[in-house]
Image (cartoon, rainbow, N blue to C red; front, side, top):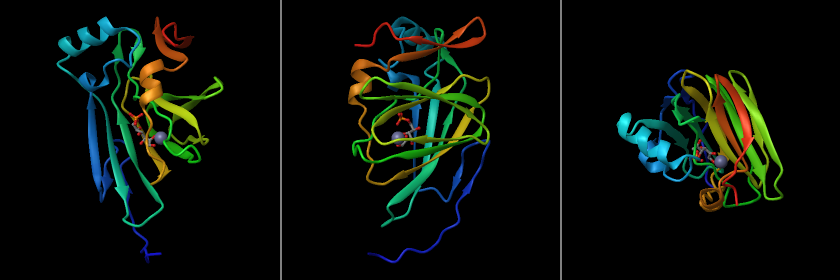
Length: 189
Ligand code: F6R
Ligand code: ZN
């Protein structure tokens, strides 16, 4: 096993900046086709808001380590009545769990397992969520400010997006006259 040195990494709770960082990506709305319930609203939002940024992921990975971590910064916004959300995934390695710690903003972490059990965990400053092995997870910004959270995961976890992309998740998170509401997803199959 290689010798690893301790490392200090700074995380900005408001911007999600990670310093030093080793990788990042941005997801624009155009790259999230098929994940929102209302496809017409997706196309309209894309056009009217000029393909907005929905979220950005920044990571710190130490070569040779079994763990890596980083931040996800989600912008506030909606597609129709549905709040901005991440793609959602299972981990490729079904034995790997993960931890999300919310640094700022307000949101919900939507989880479901392969037996159809659904859970939500509130995301607000100071809350951490344990994501058990083999539970799909999707974060949702249902506030009016950016939602920033840090995550800590095995480097071997990997992402399996296929099933969620094909089936959706069992619950939708909607804005109903200013109130956040979870409803059954009529398109889930
Ligand atoms: C890693 C993890 C997060 C997400 C990120 C974006 O296992 O859960 O880093 O990858 O919040 O969400 P997705 O990948 O679902 O688009
Ligand atoms: Zn994950």
